[in-house]
Amino acid sequence: MGRIADSLNLLKFYNTKTVMPSYKFKVYFDNQDFKKLQDYHVLSVSVPLYKFEPETTMYGAVPKSYSKLSHKGFAVKITYEDDHKGTVLQMIHEMQKSVISQDGLYVPLHLATLGNLNIEIINNEGDVIGWWQAKNTFYLGADDVTLDYSSNDTMKYSINIGADVIKFIKYDVSIFKQLARAASTRLSVPNPLPRIPGL
Image (cartoon, rainbow, N blue to C red; front, side):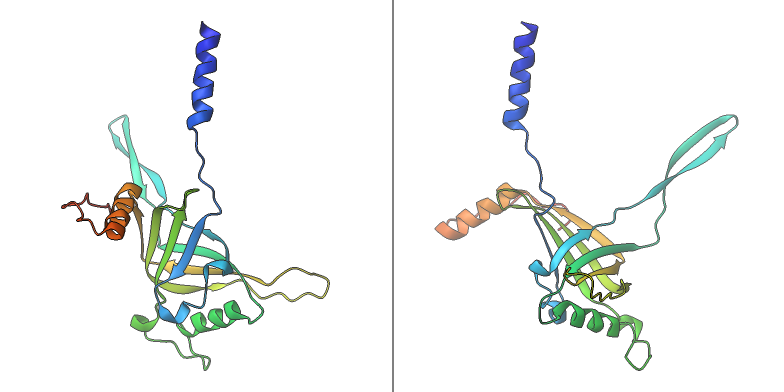
């Protein structure tokens, strides 16, 4: 009986287990100036999370430890692959000009922003199940450009984007499917809808 139960549990595991692909995502800016950076330009993106370190207080001979935020701002790293028009390279120079002009003059701090950066996670069914939004992003630089006669590789650029805050918004897929059905069939949407965390 034990082997049969183990086999049934294993079968249930493989019938119900799902995986989240790491290659289904979208990265885009809200800023119209950077709309030329399309989804297909992005090869990879690294989303930072808050980092913590232990902090210990002694109560006599007894230590009490807890987590303390170790944080000096966020930096999102995006790797782009350029097209034959050099769109990504042009956008890098536009981002540089958001910090410093080509004459070497700093841009006023309140203008040195790229807008909001959005990163969406998409499952195998095409549903957006999570969304990071980096608020008030600013340019932190890019890797040096390397040109090489001995290579047949494509032009890739890794860009670092800073942000004051990165909000994670979890989608309830059922709510959005309900809204889509209601819109397509002109049905009334139940009110109130469940609140989406972060919105």
